[in-house]
Amino acid sequence: MTDLLQFYPTPPALVRQLVAPYVRGEHEWERRIPGVILDPSAGMGDILGIVKREYGVRSNAPQTLLAIEPDLKGQMVLAGLGATLLAFDFFDYPAADRHIDYIFMNPPFRSGAKHLLHAWEIAPPGCQIACVLNEQTVANAHTNDRQVLERLIEEHGQVEDAGQPFLQAERPTDVRCVIVRLTKPVTETGIDWDALNLEADETAAAPDPETFMENALARRGSTIAGLVQSYAAVRDLMAQRDALESSIKKILAGAQIHPAKSIQTDADLKAAYWEWVWKATTLGERTTSQFRKEFDALLASANSVAFNEENILRVLQAFVASAPDIMQQCIVGAFDAMTRYHAENRDRSAAWVTNDSYRIARRIILPWQQLYDDKYRYWHTWGFREADRLDDLDKAICFVVGEDYGAIERTSAAIAAQMRRLAERPGLDHREPFYSTFFRIRVFKKGTIHLDWRSEETWERFNYAAARYKNWLPDKTYGKSAGHAP
Image 1 (cartoon, rainbow, N blue to C red):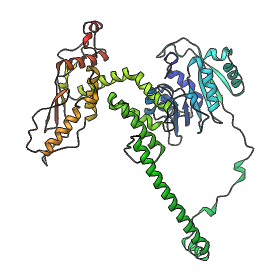
Image 2 (cartoon, helix red, strand yellow; image 1 turned 135 degrees about the horizontal axis):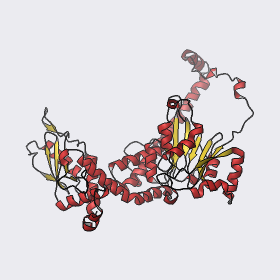
Image 3 (cartoon, rainbow, N blue to C red; image 1 turned 90 degrees about the horizontal axis):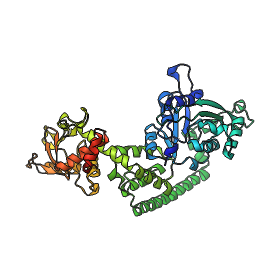
């Protein structure tokens, strides 16, 4: 987990100073930093975000962003930037197994020397490092790490004054900072490869079919025998492959892993096992559809992160630590999603403390649904557009009232079941209401769904929780209405 006491988001001005020497292009519209860029203490993407937005990809100068970050929230933000997650812990990441052009970093102040020394250790030859440090890290070399760093700077780098860049920052401090710049030397082989003027391999071209046939017949004893041996070898390997595939299926079934698609790569295998973690821990029942999309993006970017006990525990611990924020986002997100559909979904008759505040109405109207085909006179059975948002609404209500999401009659499922009934029984009156745990529901051929809250108390508690998280309540309201809190 990120050490919040040592987490100081990098201000934009400091990021620009950090990367300035590596920017190419004379004119503002040409500025870019091409190559492979790593931030080993990436946080919420403060450095990589500016690198991408202001010095990003050009067709003739591609840019690849890499990140290491232990915090789940940060990992999701970084995945959204398109960064590839290499590891959760910087010190678990060994010497780089890939080319890296730049390492830009703002490590925790109290362990800055240790982080920078590890960056030097993993950096490949030719890599350039720019690191923000507390000024005292280089001015007061009283530890072994600082003394090693002092010698490293003398031999391979320089120190640049950065002043007090955090005075007006998101998390202010008056600490004085420096930027240490290091360049990993390239080991020369002594061979001038260009001077060798190596010729292309002309024998690599495919042979002429007629020539091949003549040669094969001329040497049919060895050529045909070789083909037969090749066939037998491939046949045996295919038999082994089939046996291995059968064993893989048995192992997956034993672990109750049922992948949605065929597993062809290690990335596919990791995705299937993370899906099991997602379902078995009921994370899916406690998070929104947006959280799931961000989590999937994170996994897609984390193709080099091992699927092991430590990483699984880190993800679960990160989720537990983020649970209050996730609950708040779920409630506010569901409230905003439902009230943006239709003006009538906003009840301003009893607004909170601000004129811009409102409640979600007792009747929620969902317009523009594809429910009924007038031309062919049939009801659609494949569902409707807003299943994810309605699931998020049910989850948010469960957070507020303390219900088990896995035990309720979901609103989306109730609508889907009603659509199937209408399709199978043409004489059924579509105007008749049906029910989920929290709503009385009606569907209309024009493409509208009405959701009426079944419990006034639940409606009030949900509105109160949303208003609280949106800061629409006066301070005294908390004391007077504590019983409504989620």
